Length: 479
Image (cartoon, rainbow, N blue to C red; front, side, top):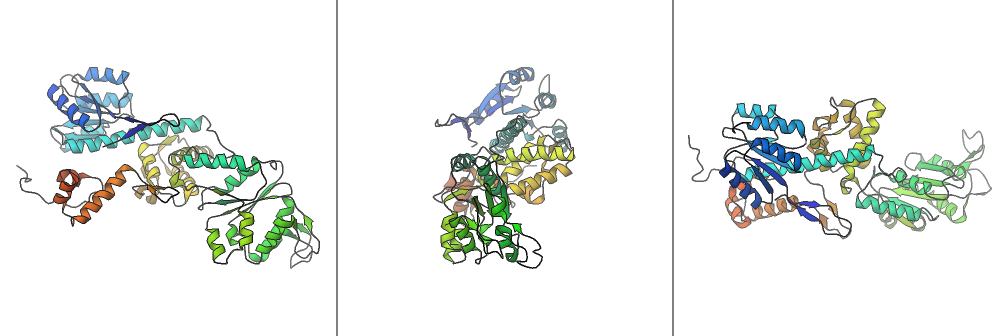
């Protein structure tokens, strides 16, 4: 059963919204039968026996999906579908036909029907189609709303874009921490935007008028990193032809951001610790101390505390750096931020490439939200840039996405701090069915009895094993 929740003000209990289905058939008894079956399965059906009145209903009511018979008096289902799609391209239409032949399939494609089913329909199969249609329409609405939100100029927090609960918490924490000078350690996977968080801290601090200097500790050889951080004097080493100030001096009064701090060599760790404690640095080859006034923000994509326990990172430096910890959430835990960011990157790339690409199709958006994004925001930006460059239409489609994203992950899950996994209801059902199937040794008849469904329903589940279903007695086709 498809469950939809209406968004309510903070603190209020979400309302369950029954998907609205308009059934159009000039046979009143068929209308009543379909209406009763759909109502029993969680839908809110409206019934019309006149196609013209059905069009009037659509002008005055918000409907999620339309089911129409193909053969009707007056206006047939193909013409009705064509008129609905022309006026409401976002509204899926399911055709019912007495003969599921090639001619009917071609006709349904021509009028851009969402799907077609044989009449009388198999209710379980029809419900599965309707659920898919409703999900796609709701996703299309969300894509459109996000496009309008980005076009209107969504509120950015110093370059950080996101409206999901994890990002709201991050933004609130950055706002509180920016006002103080305490050292901050930003932890998160690669590609989650840790430097953006560091820049936001700087721009919201009293140091925003001074320099923000960023350095990746893994990008510079150990032999040069000390001089890069603390500077050097002429003759300190080969090619040191003049005195050169280090990052600590160049960022005087501002912020230094050291990314991948876990890669800082053990020999440099005590020197960094001393610089933080004494607020002075000694350039390479010099015997003088230089006073510095900087705020240090560091970042890592590894478990730094584990490195401390393995004696790969100094404990005293770790606690000096980790006065305040900020966690940049992975993209897979940010919900609809995936589509918000995708639309943002799409518009950036379209402008840069002078391409008339304005948005995403619903099917493309579904693939983006189903993918787990191991490369996080950086990977999403690259995928959208590639898609904008290659697409032949004004909206990105599934075909514009890389194979890895098209294949995708069927389920994206989140994790609570307690370690409890949060997954969609469909995933809970899928896992339970698998457990029952394992317990019955793959016997679908017995598994269906335990689950309280018929064997055909069990087999039709999207996650059911796709192999020819053995025919039970009485299942033989009648010629």
